[in-house]
Image (cartoon, rainbow, N blue to C red):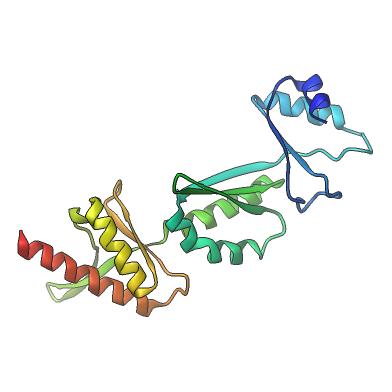
Amino acid sequence: MTAVLESVAGALRFCHRSDPFPRGRWHTNTIAGFFQPEQTLAVLKNFSGNPNVEAYLIYTVYFSAPKELTDAVRLDVAEIMSQTADAMAVWEGPRSGMASLRLSGARREKVLDMKKVLEAIFSGRVVTTATLLGGRITQHEIWHDFFATAPGDIWLQHLGREIGVTVMSDKLQRRLRFYDPEANDAYMKTVERRLAGKISILDARQ
């Protein structure tokens, strides 16, 4: 098959056997990647009308994140993906502390819809706290520059293991993100109190 594909469209970017895809009829599915869209279209045209080969486009999105985060979202991802038959998600890695999730599907619209859902899962919930100001309760994000440091990462890891959740520092956006596999608001309140207390201690030291 590799030789046939290369004879039609030129050099392949990759070609590997895959798990049975939802639309596949046999257990010998192969995913082939090309360097240019025109190469892919040439292959589809070549196989058009061939009763022995079922060829179609697969749209793919990759999510990469630290293993700590991917471990925290695996259950949510599995639950979401179990509700759709038009796309599949496969974990890859981890390598060098990072793991990837490959989202694939033959229906472009469905892949885009699932991409938005998975983006929300990977984003988690931004940690906020309520403050009484001028007689009104307002929400604001919890942040301190300490959480952008290596000691801050270690402190968050200890907090997560103690409470049973995952709290990660988004250093780029200066936010703390919260991942709760049980989606329990009680955990959220506990995390907020602990983080607010830590910031109070840090501010007092300064």
